Image (cartoon, rainbow over the protein chains, first blue to last red):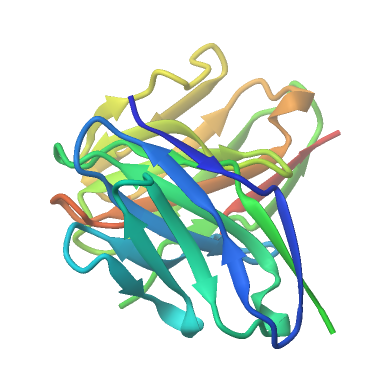
Length: 114
Length: 114
């Protein structure tokens, strides 16, 4: 069975500094992986997805993530944090057999300090 | 493309009352999900539909929760009677058929039980 671990429940960075949100997964198959962002009182918005093509995936708002099979990781990065990036971030994995079952990580809350 | 629509956005009821939530998925999306998100946690799957059939309702508390997706489009989720622990955000998501497809989320309904 697949599972997702987000290593930090809370990350705090200063505006203009890099962001790193960590995600590790376990899966019996070649996984599809996603990062979603959730701002207060909003639904989850897709940031980016990995589906067995390029291992470095670029998403919206300057975010990117690198799939490392040997490390079973899919960490999310951004070179320079903006105040508007403050939100909850979820790493999600699905297996590749019709990909119906989505497994969510517990989430990482990102705070951006002025 | 119009996103996933949910209503109402907010609902306050007393315990033991009933409540219903509505979801209109993105046009053409065959799969529809209902999630419960308790404050500070990730989404928990309640039920998944493929067209108008149930794929997974293993975590739906069937003694009080029910859901339907008539005609394979709109869906309603009902709680009767509500308990204090049902206070949460109820998220609807939809997804195109096929592997690697991400879920698209509505903004959710925030339910408060008094």
